[in-house]
Length: 146
Image (cartoon, rainbow, N blue to C red; front, side, top):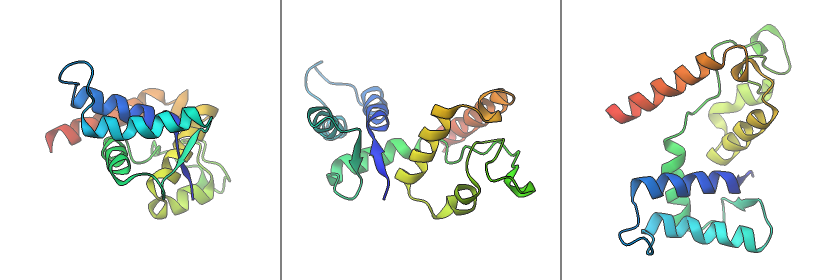
């Protein structure tokens, strides 16, 4: 089971801070507070990942709301795994990750996103970076229209 990385929890906190700002600059709205408690425990215990199966329900729900606002797949529609490559030149996922993507849970998908972002060696991050950002902009626009 994949863990939820601290950077994703931080991104979710920032998502909720923008969505539901503190009414007085001190008090935190419930989603932000739930995530902040998990974040604080990770920092205190020098951990980098929270176990999604033991995460408090309110924090997990707040994280899932943020997760739903992110692009689902790193695919840029140039898949070299279909040509026999073990690793896709387009998005950076392994053949197995491409094949099992729809079966993967949110934490496992985010772990894959984190890895390919840190590696940044696929076409998504260089040759076709504009295509990837256009796809993310289209996804964000579609979400806003719903």
